[in-house]
Image (cartoon, rainbow, N blue to C red; front, side, top):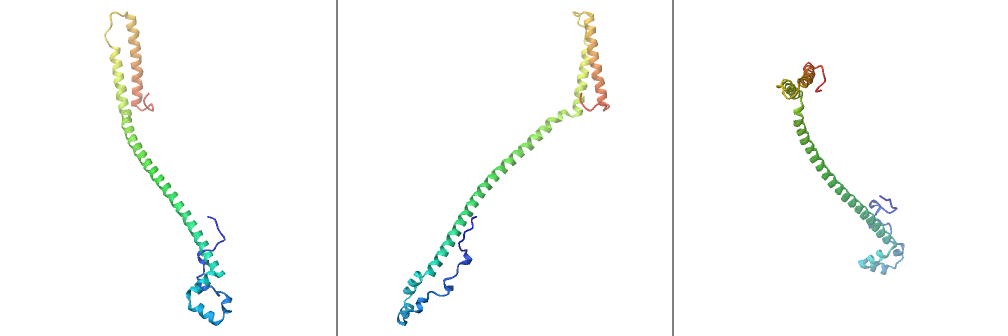
Length: 179
């Protein structure tokens, strides 16, 4: 905030502390001085026209202006902070919703990943091996030549034995996982 060379509230003196209203009052004749003392309106008018009172009123007005501008600045800051606070609250709510959605999706992911555990994969591999063994022993198709059958049989048995070896190594934990 800007610093002004105006008076602060602590600098304002009560009107009773003004040391002397004016030396001109002492110069008044006794009759006029008595009229001045008897009529509060005359004293009020005289005081209001005195330079000391005008300076006093101006210092109070300056202090009030400064204080009101500071209050307006504070109110502006409060309004900004409330708007920011509402934005933060909204964003926190969104973050909490997104986090809850993440937790739910993570739980679904783990459920879906259960089908890829070692036991499940090993049993699936064993079933494939059994299917390959059965396929290699299927009955001979008489339309095929005998050499074609033998070549197919050899290829199927070769695949069967390769997969069986992989399965055996896997069971013995000589491999790091599903191959």
